[in-house]
Each structure stands twice: as C-alpha cells, then as structure tokens.
Image 1 (cartoon, rainbow, N blue to C red):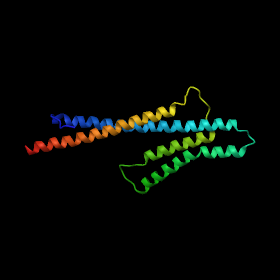
Image 2 (cartoon, one colour):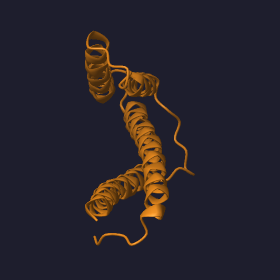
Image 3 (tube, one colour):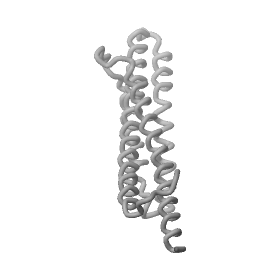
Image 4 (cartoon, rainbow, N blue to C red):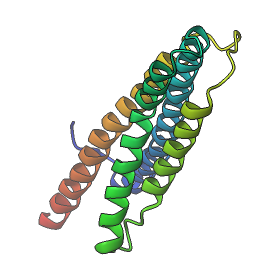
Length: 167
C-alpha cells in the first residue's frame, strides 16, 4: 500500500476502519451464536426423529442415543468452563469471561434441547446451519481483511509522520 498524500485524513480513516473492526467482531460473535444454536437444534431434531422411530422395548438403544446426542453440548460446556476458570484465576481487566459465559449458556441450551428434543419444523429447511456457518465465515473473512487494512493504515500514518519530522 502506498503512503497517503493527505496526512490530515489519516486519523479519520483509521477511526473508520477501527469502527468497522468492532462491528465485524460483533457480527462474527452473533453469527457464531446463531450457528451453534442451529447446530444444536439440528442435533436435537435428528435425535427426536430417531427416538420416535426406535420402539420403547429397545430402551438401551434409546438411552445410548440420548447419551451420544448430549456429548457435543457437554464438551462445549467443559470447554467454556475451562477457559472461564482460567480467566477467573488469572484476572485481567481487559478480558472478562463474558464470552465464555455466553458460550456456556448456549451449550446448556443445547444440552436441554438434546435431552428434551424438538419438534420438526418444515419451514426451517436443512439450510439453516450451512447458511449460518457461511455468513459467520464471510464476516470472519471481512474482519481478517479489515485487520490487514487497519495495520497498513497505521504503519502508513507512522511513515508519513516520520517523513514530516525528517523534513
């Protein structure tokens, strides 16, 4: 990226890119939450479908199915608990365990959905999970590229300021 000619517009441009980064981080988080909820809903819908097809006399198979479906939410709860406990034991003002708490709450919701099951909703096609993952990856790609642009703008502004000091 070439050095900018107008150094006065650099702070406003950097501010705009910084604001875009903040918005994209929020979008990534929201879309990841949506993808997790859709994934847990799909898992619960599949387990409900299979439970309805398995007769009551095969209780061992039904129990194994319930236990298998509960594994992903339990792993996510353990993951969130581990990182939240690290944040609690090594406190940092700039990194409160908010994301870990939200992730844990979503995992608990997924666990409840997996145990209780959900009704089949024909208006929710099987495209919800792939679309949510696609949108999250699109927002992540935008955030990643904006980070690169932001770094280049900051470096360029320092170069322009250094050139002005030399002259």
